[in-house]
Every structure is written in C-alpha cells, then in structure tokens.
Length: 309
Length: 261
Image (cartoon, rainbow over all chains, first blue to last red; front, side, top):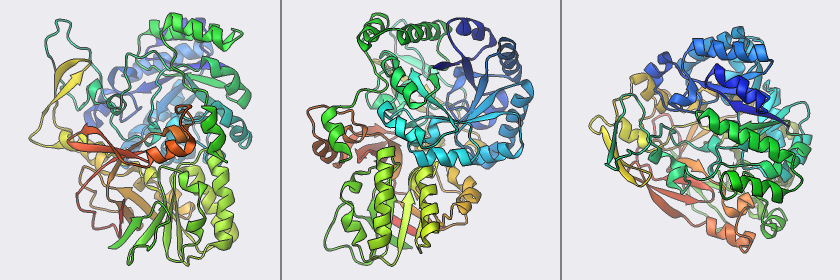
C-alpha cells in the first residue's frame, strides 16, 4: 500500500519520503481568501496553519515533489458558492501549471468546471462526498473522478464487493489520524482553530482578530466526547483487508501537526505493516501511542450477523 | 404551502390533509420492514438515507417490489447520497415510472451550525468556552459580507444543472440559522422544520456497538430522541443517526412544502 501524507512546507517532503511516504497532499488558504471568506475551514476543510499560505510556498512544494518524483494533491474539498468558483478555478489552473498532480474535491459543480478546462490534473473525490456504495462510485466515475477516498465509517469487510462493482477507479482509505465519530461529509459544524491553554493556569483569553469563531472547545465532535488528547486513530490491523479489497493508497490525516509526529506515525505504520500478527501491531502501537484507537473496529459479531438478515 | 409529516413506522390512522413522508434521511432501519410503505395508497415521499453497500443492494431489490406492488398514485423518492440518487434516476427511466425525484436534505450543503447566528449577531462579540479544563473567552470580529452570503446559501443551489440531468424536480432543505437567500433555486423546495447539524452512525448502523447489545435493541435505543447539550444557544438532539436542533424561523417565500419532523 502506498501512503499519502499531508505537508505544509516543501522542506517536509524529503524526510517524509525517506520515512516511507509515497505521495502528498496539502490544503491552501492565502490572504486573498481569508479577506473574503475567513480563516476557518471554508477552502480546504482545515483552518489556518494546517494550510499552505501563499502561492510561492505552493510552487516550492510542487517543485520539490516534482524533483523527487512524488505526486502532490491539492485539497479543494469544501462546499462552495458561485462567487468562490473564479478564485478556485484560477488556483487549480496555477496548480496545474506548477506541475501539481491532482486535486481532491467534493463539490461536483467545481469538478464539472475543472473537467471542462481539460487541465492536466487527476481528480480525487474526497471522503467528504461520502461514496458509501457502488452506485456512488460509478456516479463519481461518470463525473470524471480518477480516484475516490472512501468514507471512514465503512468496515473494510464491506469494501470488497463494493469496490469490485466499480472497476477502473483508484481507491484511497484513511489509515492514520483524524478519526471522528461523525460522518464528516454530512457534518455541518464549523471547524476552527484550536489554541493551547495558558501555562500559568490563569483563565485563557484569546482575542481572535479574524473571522474565526472557533476555539477547540467549539468542535462538535469534542462536545460529543471526542478528546484531542486521545491516541491517533489507526488502521494498522486493517491494512491487509483494505489491500485485499482493492485500496491502493492509505491516507494519513493530521494536517498541520508537527513533522516529528507525522514521521513517527509513518514509521510506525510502515513497520506495523511488516509484522506478522495483529497482536504484535497492537503491542507496538500501545508502546508508542497508548491504548489502541482503531479506525475500523472489528464488528461485534452478534450485531453484524443480524444487521442485514 | 403544502404540509407534510414524517411517519416513521406503520401508524393508523394516517394524518389527514398532509402529505406523508416515509423512510428517514439518516436511518435505514425502515428497510428491514418496508412492506407497509408499498401498501400506502396516498401520495408519499420516501426519504432514503445514505446507503452502505449492503443497504444499497437491499434497497435496489425492494425498489423493484415498490414498482410492482406500490399502490400510491404519487410516489416521490428523496435519496440522500449521490449514488442512490443516480440509481433512482436510472431506475425510474428504465421502468418508465411516473415517480418524482427529490435531492435529499443531506445533499443540500447548508450551513447549519448554530454558532453562525451567534457569530453574525451584531451585539455579541465574545463567548465563554472551555479549553481543556480551563475557562477561556473567545472574541471575534464581524464577518465580511461575502462570508455571510456564503453561509446563507445552500450549496445545492449551485448544482441545479447536474440535478436537471439527474431528473431531480425538488430540493429538500432544513431550517438554517442565518436568513435565507432572497432567490430560490428555481425548483420546488421542501423545508424540514428542524435544522440538521450532523450524522453519527449508531451502534446498530455502524456494527461497532457493545457486543452484548442486539441489533434490535441498539436500533430501538437510537430511535428515541436524546438531548446532547447546548450549542450556540440551541439544544442539540440525536435520534436515528441524525443530530438536529429546533429552528423556529419562518420558511422562505420560495419554498412550497413544510415537512414536520
């Protein structure tokens, strides 16, 4: 399985490649966008520092990846309104001119607009488009998709039949980080910037000068009990099943996290993939990160047997 | 304004003078016992949730039964994922059925976070929050008009060309915290009373529940609405995989159907 990692700077590409990454993706948000539409998650579904913040930096990423022979995808995976399309088309055109490999998107109107331009780009349908059945895969293929990122909630056991019914597409699935109990393609809560508490234990006050209404405490999933301190969601034990089903690319979340953390997780997953048993993988994970936090928990058999009977 | 009401299970007598909505936009449990829906002899809309592959195959099989044995003179399907929507379009075409097709409420790409109303309120600019275990306070500046406009506008409005190719003749929306755009989408529009905020699969639907809980028990537990707490001054509730809150603002003038939840 090839692994796709997030980057925010060109300098991150080489060490990640050396640690076992195969391709990359990045979000984008520059001054021009922020001025009109804010610095929350409205452009690339990630806010602020999780994104590349200027065209020069984007060009550096495309150049460095090109030199090292690694594909890079640009995430334009939010839902947009017509006044935003001009900006997005210009950005995609520039991305193609810079040598970017492809675009990850969910907005089918944007996909149609970009396909019409015949840019030398591949198109990947984001997991936010919730391709949960074979009819959706075929539909997205008809719309011009080359790849589909599968939603997080589908058990790998259900994938085999589903992917076999839609040949000709490349498939990607989440394998590390960004686990969420909500189906994010149908989640309308705003993601916004988190911030650390003050070290002196005084009540923290943060004046946010931009249009960001957030604060980590405003994440809906956190209000539902998800803790950002929990160990990273991990699919180490599901990699064989995913590969068997036809998933060729494993996606790492964690945009905007420190490079050191991404390297640690990548090295872990590369090593875990080579281990013989789930027990060994779990042991290794627990030693590094804490209690297991499985991306695709094994179904409770009693529930599963009765589910579709 | 046409009125409509969700009927989640077989229920007698059926409400008079209102269109019936069967199925559910977030939960496919009705597919386990769908016979009563085919037996409806009144106009109805069938809300089809986003379907997993096993559920999709189950639905595709049952759709043939509905076409063969359905008694209603006026059937409208409202799928909530693109694949099922496309499948229904092809099925209706192939079978030359007089059925109508609506784009389900989860495809509407609306901005329904109740925090948006707070954020756009001209007098409120600060909000207490918890950051970890600590009390914190957020303050913010007013959003620019472009951003407010963007939040008011359901993204599905920008996809009417695609929807036309798919034979969609109606859009389903839900309440939203910011004022509606002045212009509608140029298609008939249904408005669901509550504002839908998110979808979270229950133990039964995700097959990840407590091994001691049967499918039926997990499913029954999920069908009862539970209050989850406050967000942006609204009480969030969860049932049948959907998180929602009551949104009491009036429907826009360009909507022609109000759907009670």
